[in-house]
Image 1: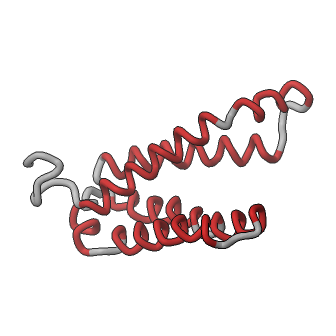
Image 2 (image 1 turned 90 degrees about the vertical axis):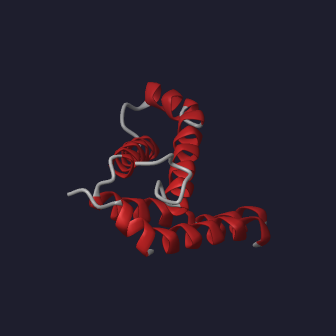
Length: 126
């Protein structure tokens, strides 16, 4: 197999997804402080459970995609869809749709790329 950036290597849609997933994982990790602080008052909180599930799903999906597993494509598409509600949430928070539109566009771009033939061919391990 050639260098990952060559045409015979990793498709750009996979590279973009992995960059997104690692950025998401870093963001989840950086915002973990307040959730850990909540754990001192109550050992189980809804926000803590959601954060841990997102972190686990992100790590699991990155692992599947990196190993070129077919199942990774479905998980990657699912992980990409969480950006779609981010646009309306930003609109409700800021009162402006414009900052949320790039996230929706990124989600649609990732989903389209992951559904493409190049990603399907690259994620071919059972």
